[in-house]
Amino acid sequence: MLYKHFPDFHATIEDMIAEGDKVWVLEKCTMTHTVEYRGIAPTGKKLTETFVEIYHIIDGKIVEMWTVIEDELDFLRKLGVIEYKGFPDEVR
Figure (cartoon, rainbow, N blue to C red):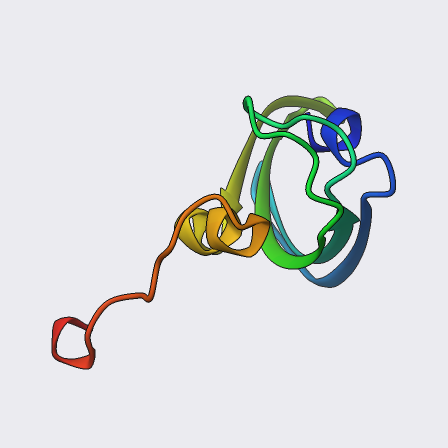
């Protein structure tokens, strides 16, 4: 989905852990919002995000994949579609 909405999407693998039938990948990603994304008109903003992807592998093939975005609210804030200042320190 990100490649469709962020055509210049680029991921760099920072770390990878394999255990059993799962592989965890930590990625640093860069992208520019040039195509409508979830109803949000292109902003032209350049973003850097961290993702964790978890792959379930059976017989050498990926059968499932999960992606965890570092902070979805911060992602939307960087796009400029919401005003979000984070949680107060006492909540953390």
